[in-house]
Picture 1 (cartoon, rainbow, N blue to C red):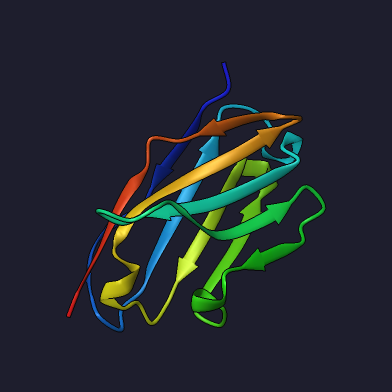
Picture 2: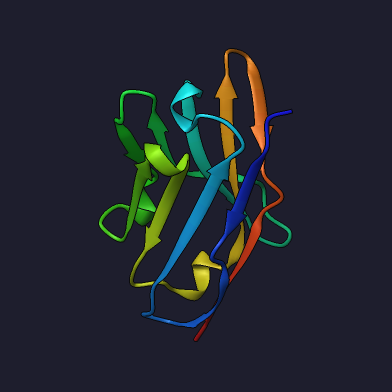
Length: 115
């Protein structure tokens, strides 16, 4: 059973930083793509950042220059460093991994940014 477990969410003031972690039950490098999504109340889920097995990253425009996705293969963990947070970043953040055509999703971690 493949599991992804997120952690690191919390409450932070506008302008602050948080670092999210997503740890896989197996080898994180086995995933074709690992991605961070977020979903705010009343809004659709949106892709925040992604990383291929080769380590290439991509970000949605609104977080470019503020968020950085990285990984530690030895720890089977990917990270999302979030800086200069704004209230618009408030959402539940999910880690997704893709093995072939199968999508695995973590339980999510809440990020709340106060103004």
